[in-house]
Amino acid sequence: MAERIEVLLTEQEVNDKIREIGEQISRDYQGKQVYLVCILKGASFFACELAKRISVPVFLDFMSVSSYGSDTMSSGVIRVVKDLDESLKDKDVIVVEDIVDTGRTLSYLLEMLKARGTRSLALCALLDKPERRVTDVHVDYTGFQIPDEFVVGYGLDYDQKYRNLPYIGIVKF
Ligand code: 5GP
Image (cartoon, rainbow, N blue to C red; front, side):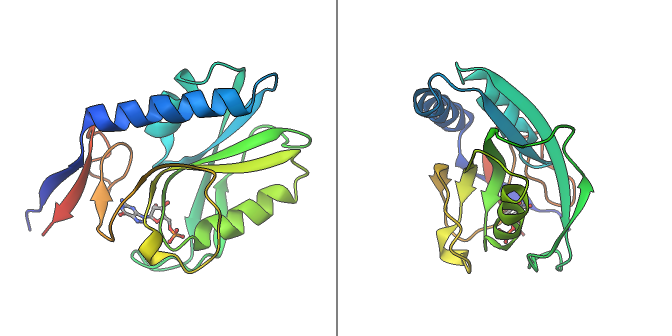
């Protein structure tokens, strides 16, 4: 079945927003080093672009998790598929995520990372679907609040396709 992609956020809008978030983080972390934890695979494009826009020293590390839920509903219980290379002890950590939907995955993940002894722990998400939230996870840096639609592009996939789109699109079936 062929699906169609409708542009929701253009490449220019996404890039402008990432620059804004980068500037904000640079101000908030003045005099510190930030440790960006990128959640694979979806957040990889965002995390790399964001890192380029941050002017304080940046360390980049990657983590891959899989949810035990179905494809459309995460259970929140996650399994670490690839763990970080470095310890988070006493670090100023920002978790970089592509999208916060129900918030279940992140609530669980943030608790897990906090237990590793971070000095501070913040969350940065390119996209947020507030209507879908079932947990009270707090997003410190949000790119865009979007409606309850299934989106792709800028790292987000549908069946592993469309990650490479330079914009955010809604999948229409
Ligand atoms: P949560 O635990 O917040 O419900 O799930 C978050 C994860 O669900 C995201 O990291 C992402 O992998 C996936 N997800 C949620 N909404 C979308 C969407 O609209 N498009 C895509 N491609 N993935 C989504």
